[in-house]
Image 1 (cartoon, helix red, strand yellow):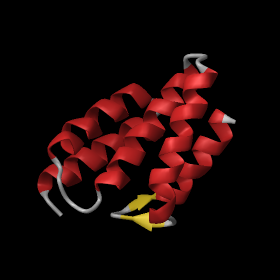
Image 2 (cartoon, one colour):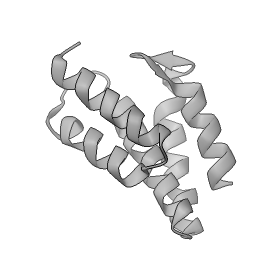
Image 3 (cartoon, helix red, strand yellow):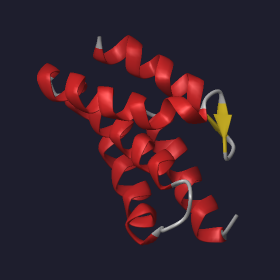
Length: 99
């Protein structure tokens, strides 16, 4: 794991856990844009999860549902844990807050 990855994921998790979904998306997207490794869909899924929850909180249920479906598709193969991230917890939060 690289320092950049560790910092990006830690920043994402802190913002996501605090309900700052737009910030979580922005933090991880900066890392993901340059990332070309095998976990690209995993990081994409985390970013999509944050975007879906941001849409849900903003009252955009159509956007939340659509992006949440893509996030689930990208994250489910990595459950329950991947790269130190509790993927199951992210998926459960998506189910609770975008249903």
